[in-house]
Length: 238
Image (cartoon, rainbow, N blue to C red; front, side):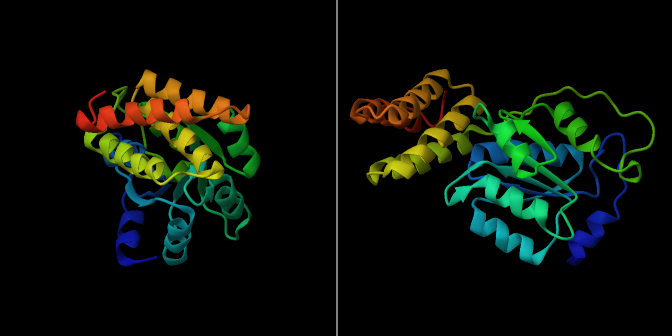
C-alpha cells in the first residue's frame, strides 16, 4: 500500500462522505461511463483509479490493493468475467467485487463469475451507488448515525461521450473482424444506454442481432457509422 493509499484508509466516513477511506478501481473502457463513476466516487468521498482493459487492471493490481473493484463485462482485450473470477479466487480476496454492464443478462454472468453484486448501466444515482457499496461493508467502515438523503443524479460531461464515439469510429474504420464487431455492438449499446441515446442503442442492438443470425451486415454497419459520425460532428450532442 503506497503512502496515499495509507492516508485514504485512515479517513473516517461521514454522513456527507459515506465512502471516505475507500479506494475504487474501475475497470472500464468507456470514458463516459468512467466519468460517471468518477463523479459518484468524488461526491461520496472515495478515491478512484481507472483501468481501461484487462492488462491495465492487472498492472494496477500488482502495485496496490483497492477496497472495491468495479469491472465492466465488455473490455477490448477480453471479458470482464475473466477478471472477476481471478479476483474472486485470489487470496486474500478483494474486499468488494462488483460487475457492471448495460447488456441484458449481465447480472447473471457477473454473479456467476464471482461478483458480490451488480451495477446496471446507466449508473447515475448517487444514493443507489452509495447504498449498494455500504450494504456490503463491515459496520466499522460505515458512517455513524443517519446519512443525508441525496437522490441526485450525476451527469457526465458530453466531451467524454464524444471521446467514446471517436474511439469506436476508429475501430469501425479498421474493417473489424467478427470478434471486434461483438465488441463494437456491446460497447455502443452500453454507451448509448448510459447517454439515453435511443437511436444509437437501437442500431447497436440491430447489429448484434443480425450478426447472431448470420445476416449481411453492410447496411447495419453503414447506418451505425453514420449515426456515430453525426454525433461526432455535433460535438457529442445527443
